[in-house]
Image (cartoon, rainbow, N blue to C red; front, side, top):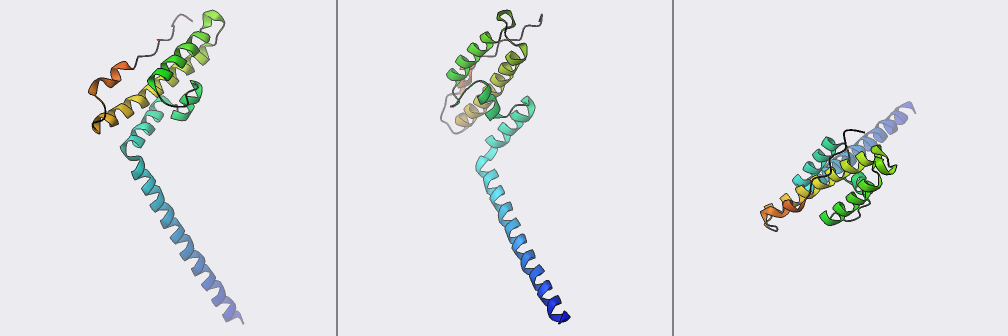
Amino acid sequence: MDKYLAQIIVMGVQVVGRASSRALRQEFAASQAAANARGRSGHQSAAASNLSGLRLQEAQQILNISKLSPEEVQKNYEHLFKVNNKSVCGSFYLQSKVVHAKERLDEELRIQAQEDREKGQLPKNVTAGLSPPHPLPHNL
């Protein structure tokens, strides 16, 4: 009886082991495929997120941007920068978050423009329309 119980346990462990290793291989293959689909732009975007400390989605939320376009970024940035100016009882902290969000979104726009240029879709001077953010006042 003990012999059969041991065989059942060993077979069960083997079945579970094979299934989990197969699932792990499939998960690894799926993550590799997703990484390859993101390509180089995904790596550049992730690097920009690490450098700025803001994820792209967070920067879009701060500036209330649904679709990434230079005009919308600039318009929302200017409005939020003015509204949060300390001279009109705004918040320096929020104003700095707005500046950092704009810098992150501008970097993402540059990455996209570079990819489009490499694909031959845009002229080389397309990033000339991106304006630098206002510098934060140092006397606050």
